Image (cartoon, helix red, strand yellow):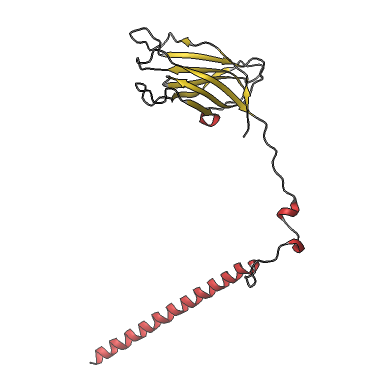
Amino acid sequence: MSRVLVPCHVKGTVALQVGDVRTSQGRPGVLVIDVTFPNVAPFELQEITFKNYYTAFLSIRVRQYSSIHTQAKWVTCLRDYCLMPDPHSEEGAQEYVSLSKHQMLCDVARVLELRLILRQPSPLWLSFTVEELQVYQQGAKSPSMTFPKWLSHPAPCEQPAPLLEGLPDPSRVSSEVQQMWALTEMVRASRTSRRIGRFDVDGCYDLNLLSYT
């Protein structure tokens, strides 16, 4: 599936005041980054890429266009995505991240705006953010390949000759296998019945002989 880069405007980070996590230095533990798409029609989000900078958890909200008569709504499509397995260590602190629409919790069609919510609970890092943010939309679908009818269903005169002589005809294999299976079952059943009859007769003779003795 092709993707197309969407021109966007990334606003400055804003520290949350409600439910904020602060350290002894007063450093905010939750930041918000709004992303707008001026002069771009509502689009279907395909992928988001960025370089992490000491952000431990990421949530993404999208504002989607519904109709002319209803107001666009904010929907959470990613919640507390872990970027650093251990916020107190530097693992994953400065890695490139790619998030596709298949990782989202909801449909990401008709997107108008993005809101990134960054969280870093560890007091070890003085600042955190995301860099080199890029947003992609779904590109035009590639035309489906259609094969000519003659290629998938050749005429009898155009069918290739068998590679090996003496191979069974595929059209007769199924019926012959069924006949062989039916005959095998009939022979097996007849052998079993004859064996059981002989056992009963032999058993009777043995009992008679024992009674006479």
